[in-house]
Amino acid sequence: MLKVNNQKIIFSAFINPAVEGHKLVNKKQLIKPKHDLLQPLRQWLDSFDIENPQLAKFIAQLIPAQCPFERDIILFGRKIAHIPPLCKLNPFYDQFVGLRFRALCYLVDQCGEDIQSYC
Image (tube, rainbow, N blue to C red; front, side, top):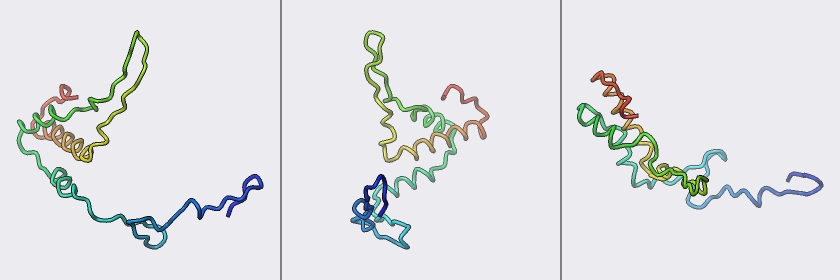
């Protein structure tokens, strides 16, 4: 219980350590269920080795450097709306960014190419 401005606030009403579908270990760690069906594909993308310059160029061109969905909607010279970057909703976003980075590193380190055209 905590007193603030002569009002009592009871935290136990807001905090429920027994979250449904999770286990509480040592009162500090919350273990999530291990039912991630996308994990094998994530691991495959993370372990994908790039050993071909043509494949590296293709990946660098295919995966954009910035989210293509982010836009400002301008009407009569005034910004009326903003569409936020939706790429982070993609469950493989981190893996694709890592794959593009590895492709660019391969082009620089192994092929000695200038990658400014891909940025």
